[in-house]
Amino acid sequence: AYQEFTFHFFSGKDVVILKEGERICGTGAALGTLPIVQNKAYFQVDVQQNGTWGVGLGNSHSPLDAVPVACDFWGIRDNGDVVANETVIGKLNKPISEGDSIGVCYDHVELKFLVNGEWAEPSITGIRGPVTDKHPASIQGLLQAYPIIYVDESAIIDVKFRRFTQEAPSGYDEILAEQTLL
Image (cartoon, rainbow, N blue to C red):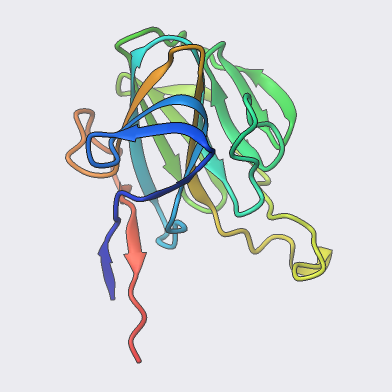
């Protein structure tokens, strides 16, 4: 069984979270507290004010006081860079400006983006979890991915985990929380 995603974040010490968890500003990153567990998940961010920002997926090792987040971050940056764990793999083929809406789609194989409801390229594949003593390389692929948003230089980002203003693509749905039954 699943329950609705809650609007809670782990965040860097200088991150400000307003509007019941729907607005992120300040300096640093905010990481959702619940991993994406369903097959096809969608969330949306709106660029309310330009600055330095990034949106995508992170994990429990993502550095929340770093801007830009590079290590353990898969996503897009305000300048259009598409980043896969510290490596810039390309530039988004659609520019992003203040007022734009970005859809984030993840199906555990590919991370895809929409800008104002239109698909943007490139997408990101090969998302992996950290290699630690608890997570040896042999099980590295079992990533628990969380939504992550980072901000700096006056950026204001609104995040929507439901009640989207841009419709989720066919087959994708709001992030659901896995409910454990005892």
